[in-house]
Length: 514
Ligand code: GAP
Image (cartoon, rainbow, N blue to C red; front, side, top):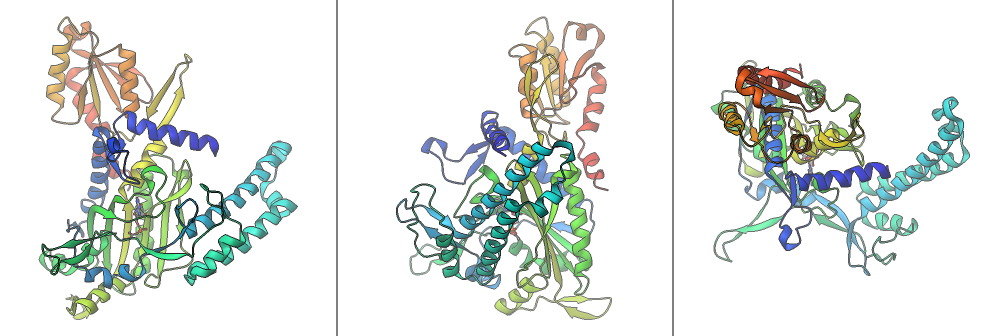
């Protein structure tokens, strides 16, 4: 694990060094849990969003997109339950004046016990070698059983307290477990309080007439309140979906792990409206469809798993997360929820307007049920980088840092390089670039040795480099180098476009999901 954390730190500095992600407002010492995407990051992020958008709106004729405003009528957040219930339990340490999420402190305590068990297992695996039976060891070893018993008891207390949102019980667990503040090292805790995660601001010019509004904490509500507009103007028939990509804002108490948990982030959400009674069937379909979308990226099927929710929110009748194996363990990147008709009927109630769907086939009106797929752009971006980052030792003993990005998502598809900066080679390279730049993102690079230039392109994940040398002027061929295999091939210039276009094609990536 420590080694993985090390890789993660390197990945974070790599992101900064190569223009993927910068801390926001860096020259003013940054702004906690807010990040900016740099020149490479924005290209990768836009490609990722296009992959999702096309997967939804091209591959499903019954899914259309919208782009709703971030500011919405404040009653929307009352109807959705966010004003009353979008809370995290927070606790302060009086000595360090640091604020923590009470649930996170307890979860870290649970993780410590899990670590102890893992260490016992690791030690035993080393001791017994090939003949080690892990399942049997876990089921019989006395120390493991003691740790497991402690974990079960703590987990039960914690689940009970969270389910009942019993803030006193949460504090009591923290005290009983002797959890200390990592900064002050003391147990001088305040009571646990509820903290609403929504940011608010005021709309209107006069103090008296100003209205308190919220920065949306999810994009989904913009879809719910527009569902009938889209259904009517688009003549959509149930089942149909509405997709949206946009910013969301949450005043996270504990924001850590780089772009994994941010205060301003981006979501790609799709609400699929179905006939009541068919929702669980659609839930299963969307689970599989979304998993295929992730796996088509080629980061390794074993890095994904479902985490089905045992305890469901009161409005849901099924829910699962798609988790990815990050350097800090399996973590949620996408949530798939069967949300019943909770949101639509509440909007009906709070707005006083009927938003029922009239089914022309059965001549009946009903409030549709909704399956939601909700994926974080930034978390997926992080999962892709984590899955593609490699410090590779080459056969000649040299090392290189390479991003094995899916070619379709790579910020730059082709680097065009004259071998030397003279003899007409730069002009030839420019000519190639000027032709290909209409088809995909190219970068011209003539500085430093060719080896250094290859390393720079490896580091940003460019799948192809084309080198123009003196022979090019005579035979009309360039050397095309593949990022992953590092193999080089002489290719006629007029074939470059087709070869690269096929490899970086969005269509090919979309088809991989079938
Ligand atoms: N409309 C449902 C909804 O918002 P969620 O599980 O709270 O569900 C969905 O969020 C996805 O949004 C998560 O799976 C995650 O990828 C992303 N997400 C949520 N909070 C985030 C944060 N603070 N920073 C980055 N991504 C976040």
